[in-house]
Length: 550
Image (cartoon, rainbow, N blue to C red):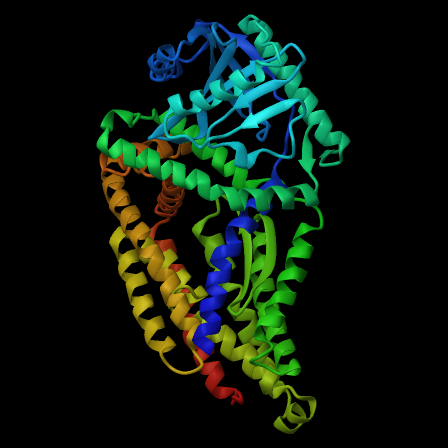
């Protein structure tokens, strides 16, 4: 029964996680009106112009002719500037917009969209693999997305619909400059309609907008359901590229770094007032329900209090060290977690954050046990509180991943040497699976499986990091230079064709390890000494305090 519950919990998390991730990112988005501007060839970076030469022959075969370049700012990102190319098919009075995907894929680098405006103001818009992310409805727009493998298929869908509409509507001929202006005006109407309907709200003191909770939730559900279509499409593109290698595009490092920074901004998002409190309360309720079959009410309340105190230690230390977007939440059937981010966090700060979870709980539990007589402990019902405080927190201090002690050891020793990190994870998996085979310890079995799933990615990162350390000067502190070096090493190692989301996670992990490697061995040994003192000191205190175990 226990294994079934944990299996269902893991399955539930895997199913729900994409929706929660989309919801969280949508809440953090800042939206804006798109500004388009026609640009001359001299204003376009040379490497961007070279890239635009790649899709040009295919579109010319479909009857499109180059008109101009343009620049635009992304609707979702207030600091991003992108480049595009406009082509025109005179026979069908249709424009094609070509731009580089915000998250560049080597098997399909370009986003191609077809636009036909009619004299009555209606727009026929055919995109490809993008409709799942559209917020609400676009006024006066017939939106299509065939999720087509080939651009020709996408164009055929547009042609078929255009032929049908042309029976009652007249396509509008215009210059590329007029098209860009009409497209901008159409976008303004779309955003205004979202604001008027209450789906978007202005952010005070800025010209930016944000989604309301209801719209974010509806859009997240839509994205969660339809994201599988895009994933399937990327798989088809990848499969095609395996048999037709010319489909792979060598992405310039500057484009990949730009995509990396864009993904960082999406992940970082914008903090929304009240969301963290609702996250804590909502996750707490689900956590309490998940543990109801295992504990009575009193024990469950003690467990919640001990876990909250543990995570509060992490949380307050993060705040003290300057971390941003800090929050606490509970994980049904597993425990609780504290999260925050600080890109330039030092190894000392990370160490303090990890240590601040278990140590206060151990000290508090031992202090209560030593200060209050046993008879008074029993009468006040403190024995179980003491047991939970000391045992849960001391267990978290043990050098086993994914516990705090294991993460400390990984931070100070194993992460510095690429393949030792993989071996440490293998050891943790073996130990957790062994412990998890005993009755009542199913949680460890599933923790072992979760770590096991991360080992292939850790092995790839170790391989890249080993190569990178030979080629990258130790004195390199420029973040973009490090990112470029990592992306270039990925290509040399045969990982350049991986989906961008996968490359992003690898690059983020490797960049973090590069920053951590700058810490001296003296610092690491000093911090390791502090950890060992806490580990063995806690064991001595535990033995001397005669902590009662239920």
